Length: 373
Length: 251
Figure (spheres, rainbow over the protein chains, first blue to last red):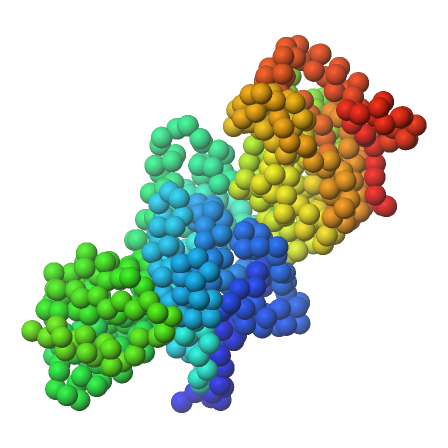
């Protein structure tokens, strides 16, 4: 039994509460629908706690201010939606390459371009993996409830500190604006970066690939650069070896820890012959669809992806041992279905809906019936 | 640089071209810090991309943040807001701070956060090979204006004052004493300070515009400069093409 009472909150408000609970001490952002409630909540709350809020001139300035604050010692975040995420891409690559902990919330809306700003979509899943130039695997989480807007925001801050990376919370308008009960509990631990100025900050062979991170004012005389650099931070813009070593390490430190990072929810899989793989708001509809199918005697199961990057390969390999067919409903043109198909021998069927509406359980159940063996 | 100032340097060599003004500016910045006795532990340099961004990084022995093209002021805003104890200097070029980064510059001036922004203005893109900047004079030859630049340059002093900058100064690197004094005054003001340092680029600007001798490039630059009090006495014809130098603003 939880000791604290449940509250009814909007998803975006729960995200802001999660940030405060995790120790967020700096927010920089630019208003954009449907994420602005996160910014508005923190504009009120952070200064009251003696922490820093700033509205920047655009999303480019926002992510850059977040990175600057993180190196000054802040647990820093921003929140945005598709158009803002596109503007942030260069800064996000800088954050990954300089190993800067920060949290980016993307409350996805119906794109491309301005699209339908107040309507739902999930078209940014591949953008956070492949939108930055160069090649680096990020961490991206996918909340499926208001409770998870709270819980996974806390987790995003912890993963950012643990692995010195930008972490994305890939929410969507459906979850961001959903109101339901949430426990603002304290059942979690807080991760903090290791502020050790005695070791190089950019990659001596630490066992887990994550170097310590002293901050400005610690006396480390830091050299931080978005150019390829050696372990101390000196630019190495011509040598092949430092570039190979750095790009490999910043990817490996994520991929070597998939088991620690990746979370999925597996339901009704014991006797399943068909499964739905879903994430975000669609995961709710998928659960309702699976329950309805079971009432009709269809042995359907569900894998709900709470982590999107690194991609949950192990969970899909497990699923491949059980089912012959998989349905992937999503509010884009089949981004995650493409990834699932690459990981499974089972037949993978896409259910794409890009009309700015959430996918109803009936649509998912109907698609599952169509593909039953 | 004199031996007494070497403790400010992380490296003992420089990648600047022969005749580049940025080495003089590096010396001016270090002298200003030394004369002020700035606490190095809480000193932060932020720079963008380009030759001038290399003035602090890696040369200066302090915390240095070498950022994205145009974004140095935004990074500095985040760091300074979170830790106001940091003496925060942005050192970058004219293209970086005023072309691609112009939006961040004017908003930082508007906020009047205590940043000292030093703009090394060489009137051209040096590192990328001599292309037109937002500060290139009309008629000047560049890699992207082979028939002469058609567009008017920014007057950076007026730009920053118009955006709300409280302390603004402009000096050529050929006049280091007032340049050092303005850097010190900017840091001490605790407000948003903008110092434009006119710093010649023999390799790209001089070569393309047929000023082959470095000394001639410096002589022409210095001859074009006129102090604000003197400029007021000149007729519009006499003032055309002159660079008005001095301290401006109300700090």
